[in-house]
Amino acid sequence: MVKTIIKIEGMACGMCESHMNDAIRNKFKVKKVSSSHTDKESVVISEEILNEDEVKKAVEDTGYTFISMSSEPYEKKGFFSFKK
Image 1 (cartoon, rainbow, N blue to C red):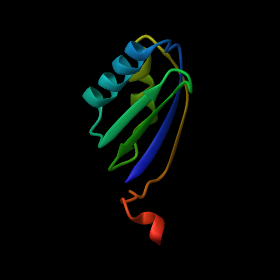
Image 2: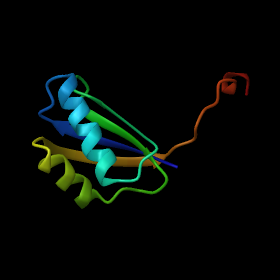
Image 3: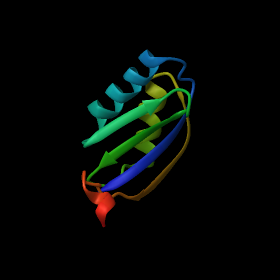
């Protein structure tokens, strides 16, 4: 699993976040996506690394400005992970 953080400029409200989430879900096979206009980012959990050019196109086609993208390995933490 991979966690991808996409920095985005231009989101201003909850509807902007929703539009960005929908655009990412429709374009890529993802497990989870959440966006924050206050943090100016979308966080995507997926099985594979996302193609940066395709992500940039999806963001800009939605009307926002793509700033950067970074990926890191993601390990799902279960409910009882605090005991480890």
